Length: 297
Image: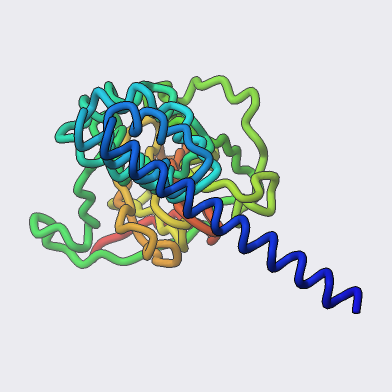
């Protein structure tokens, strides 16, 4: 009997809550018809997430970029659909500068917002523009010799240093240079970063490792073979940008090769730096990397 009474009380409470919500939305619609500007301004702070989301769109339709000045805390809204409404509106602004000015620098540097959101807004696209067409020697139409791998040398998988880059500013700080102060970088292995002290992290991180290359001898070039990087990678060798593996999230388990014949330091220590971008689930350099020395016939 007590359970029946309790269930009845719960149903009555739920029904009352539903009626209150309907009445609340009805009152909002009435004010919107009579005083649209005031209703939208108040609606952005309403307790009802549906009203807040609606007002984001309406405010943007009326005021464009100027509307965003009052949206700062909506990027932290507890309702994901409200956050999405803000992102969708910002993404409609015509240029990167307009998007930046509309929402300020705080959003770009906020590590709580995953890289996929920044990509949706196309932020930092101009700031990070490293790209190079990297042609393997065996595929070079100007090289008319057969190229073969002489030796494959696996890089140590336990000497990596890693640093997260949620603000995506590592390239402006030149984290790829040899004389970088590595204080604060974490020693990691060749496996997903989530199990190495970065649980749940999605975004950009940088890796650095030093390794020795053999004497050149009769070698005509060298490749770096990456077993897999989850999901995308941009690569520097000895401070020089050599190429990228940037085919999107589907590249998480795809092996790739880069020609480093001009950048390799034979019979010396080399510095390899990899910028990794991951948008979901596991991330990082998770399969071994090999240095392939090449000979021709």
